[in-house]
Amino acid sequence: MDAEGQQVGVMKTEEALALAKRAGFDLVEISPNARPPVCRICDFGKYQYEESKKKKENKKSAQVGKVKEVQLRPRCEQHDFDFKLAHATNFLCQDMKVKIHLRFRGRENAHKDIGFDTVKRFIDALKPWGKSDVAPRLAGRGIDALVNPLPANQRAENPHEKSKLKDLEEEPHDDDSAEDSSGKDEKNLNTPFENLDPAAAEN
Image (cartoon, rainbow, N blue to C red):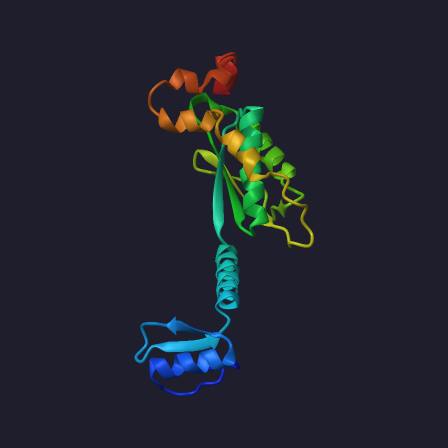
């Protein structure tokens, strides 16, 4: 193809190079696996920029509709809550949906209201970037909720820079340790409920 995008037919490499030189452009191979290979006469720097832009747009389009999961615990420490919130905000700002899953363990199952309060608080904190069309619901031994991203022109700017997320990731999180030791110390997993009245838990 020539500089105007018009096909000029099959020719020898030397002829194509001479044609590109006369036009003041480069000879760029755009389909090396074709037989014969397809080349284009154009500015190579501009061609690279356009290809890079296309890849970014395709990557962004591929992310739309994706669902990312964020896991919570009923008694979520503030730092861990903020850490999960930052990631959920980033997902929504990339046009991804966020599935919130809160897990109950042991005696936590007797106090599901605490879990619902945590999930609702998390959804409320995400309102500048997304909304939940359906109320949180019980799913097995946990609670599920889905938050959809707001349109780009309606949502707030993402306040969580990568540098801030990196700092947060370097600190320990409750869920990380819980997942790694999921069968080791059941007593430690339920420490937020150790002062509860057993009779009240049975009711």
